[in-house]
Image (cartoon, rainbow, N blue to C red; front, side):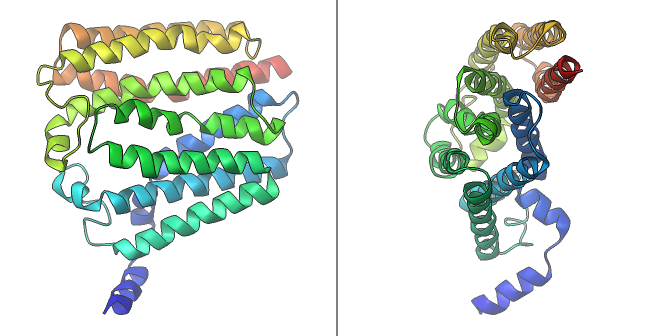
Length: 299
């Protein structure tokens, strides 16, 4: 019976469901942030082969981690309205197939990084995978601190890109790590509060748990947005970026902080959604300014 179910599941796989299973949007952002790390670590730009192997390997590990996350959380996803139609709880992908796809993608990605880039990038990617699937994912059921813990693997991709070029890490890589780490907290906090009832149904202990008026959530979001402003300026202070980036990062950081402050002053669904949208805009915007600044510097 298991074999026939699996064969049917393979036959019925769709690209759309595969994209959801492997969180194509998140994987794309992981690839972009990895590429930024490569760009800043290089004085003249990496070779095309290094670009290819690093970004494809990282994408495979990210996609595999996302699939494994959904395998572990499939029962809880089924209880939540925003995730109930994901491919596994929706019955369109069998959990065994999702597990196979997740393990295969992650393994291929790690092997590619180890054999074609360098061993250190594979170690960083493996640590990210372990942190996301085996630490953050189960911790969401036990403690609101999972949000902070989960931001660690989410901030590693630019370090992978940096290590792909240099073979190691230095203060510049850690500055990029800090930028992504402090950005993630208000992003996830806004989502946690907007969907707090859904997370309660799923049995997840987010920071919004026991915070019906949003005061604790909003204060935390504003605190991390405030810390993000000086952290985002660190690349310029370290000489990784110039005036274009400094001005852009300062403006973006202050706007992000302003939106989070509005949520703290008036904790409404409207302001929480504004904060979520601001966070979605902020990351690609600041990475884009960082890339533009570097390209102008090369010119």
